[in-house]
Amino acid sequence: DAGITQSPRYKITETGRQVTLMCHQTWSHSYMFWYRQDLGHGLRLIYYSAAADITDKGEVPDGYVVSRSKTENFPLTLESATRSQTSVYFCASSEALAGGARKQYFGPGTRLTVT
Amino acid sequence: EDKVVQSPLSLVVHEGDTVTLNCSYEVTNFRSLLWYKQEKKAPTFLFMLTSSGIEKKSGRLSSILDKKELFSILNITATQTGDSAVYLCAPSGGGADGLTFGKGTHLIIQP
Image 1: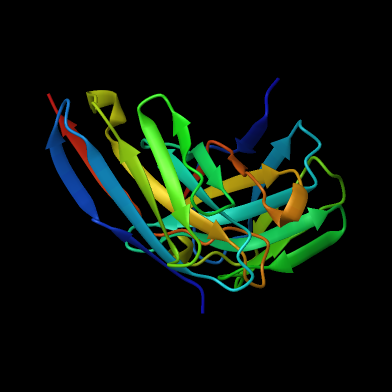
Image 2 (image 1 turned 180 degrees about the vertical axis):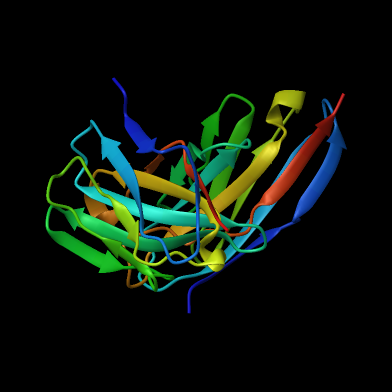
């Protein structure tokens, strides 16, 4: 049982290039999330998805695009990478629980460097 | 705006000590509060708290939530070097369905 995986694990790209980070989960969780983690800011929500074809913005969505055509996949695209997007990106998933409480499980992360 | 404040930001103790980590929060439409442990990799789940006054326990770790005073504490007794990590507090609520994370408490256990 692979759980939740991310690829690539490490990526170096140049300013202005388009980059797509992949996230795949095998639990059939309805919810999926993208966070970025930076020193001094902690983990911040970029986008999330409640189900296939349903996505919504989080705290820091600018410069990112997401899609979710299948329940198990939730790719994150940086349309034109900037140095400020250098970060560690975590994907997470959760099932919907009673009362709206949701335990989230995190993928291993992708370390992205934009030069 | 949702806000999560963890204290202390860092803490160094000796093996065997007991530590208390604090988390205060302000989120609209509060649903639950989660604690995670992060050791240079992905956060791993520790506890989810939804009701006040009910203490969650897992071995040497325990946590309690006070929904009236809007805070939670995480206790670790008889600390071990393997407890060294960043401990993250994350209430869920507000407009988005994701978690709002605090900046974490960096705990270092010295042998």
